[in-house]
Image (cartoon, rainbow, N blue to C red; front, side, top):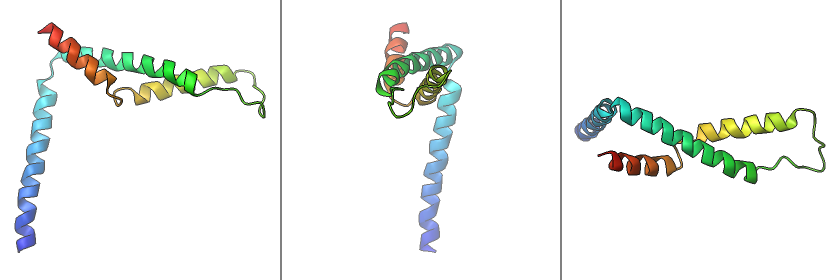
Length: 102
């Protein structure tokens, strides 16, 4: 029975946390959503510039095929947009711009 009693407070804490996250998501107004989208886009652009320098498509063992530059740039763009929002630059910029709005 003790295991069941200990599980109850943990479940209540998880429910409270999910309720707070839901309220926070509902509390974001339309301007915050647009600002978040723009800061994520800026971070994606920043990451794309960094990834172009980091991931070079130059290998002397494999000569370039027609269109390989296009596929490489599409790969870098997709990778940058997938990674955006997870590096923290977007969050910093969002908080700074949001504080300037108020």
